[in-house]
Image 1 (cartoon, rainbow, N blue to C red):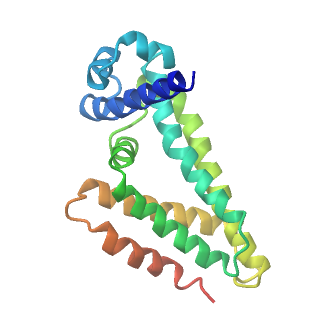
Image 2 (tube, helix red, strand yellow):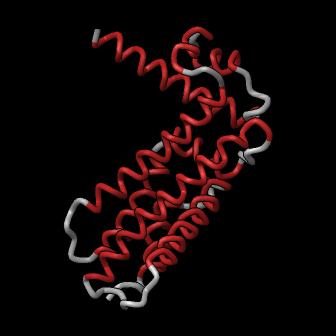
Length: 203
């Protein structure tokens, strides 16, 4: 039974990996389950075992990006840290560097940040994915709230504005990198860029 579950999970991941490729090449609207099945080297029946349609695959790709991201942020909050702002700086740097180390994640981010406009059939997922962005902002805000409580930031600091600023900054770095990964040395630039953002917040 264990082997069967492992095989099923491997098949599901193969489908998702193939979908990233097909969606990126063809666009979600023009992509078909047949193309995804061929790319994944599975049958359409195998796809239907895991997903009802390609829109569910699209959403699963987003969740595969969002869920681990939120988990990493929340895991950091479970550990007491003498400097929450410095802790968040380290986390942001790590998250950026990990994108360069994971090709599938990089391709999925490219799909969602640069190639997806949520038109037509994808409109139903726009609101859901926007809500996920609020979840990220709320998680980042907790770090800044902790910093305020510890006296590391002024009492009148708006944690939500700082959280939104971090998200916009990270998104900008990612888009610059994903547009030209061969010319943007993220391993060299990410630590410097993140430090540049956080240095004025450190006390």
